[in-house]
Length: 163
Image 1 (cartoon, one colour):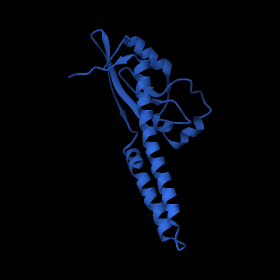
Image 2: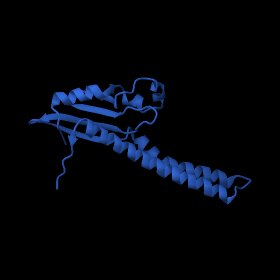
Image 3: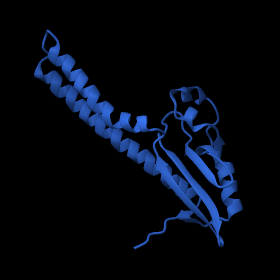
Image 4: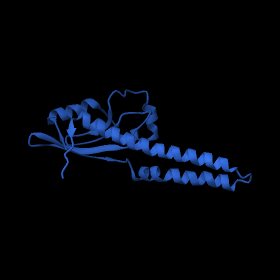
């Protein structure tokens, strides 16, 4: 993908729109302590002369994805190669399997309870669980898409499609 910006403009935009810091700290539960700091810049992360690692700069609704990539000057344009990844393998597994395991655990508590919950409890709980799980999946995908859109817009990057 190519950017319409020159290399110096690209680096200046990174510098102006990035709060420098550790992504591990930003994506951990300890990031709640930074909620009273300045968040006027849209991205959080770090960069150097050829690469960057960033995420959305939000404490209330964090994006659990990292946009990492490399940039270089090729001929007269800046070429940018990036990927959007999960912070860790554990995070990816947790997002996929936690709703299933929690649903099984709570349903087994209902089932093995000596008072035997009425069927309405199962229906209400499982309906709520399915709706909230689907909303969570949709919301995470939306946050990932918004992170990419903001990045492409801010750095004036055009996608090249090959057929």
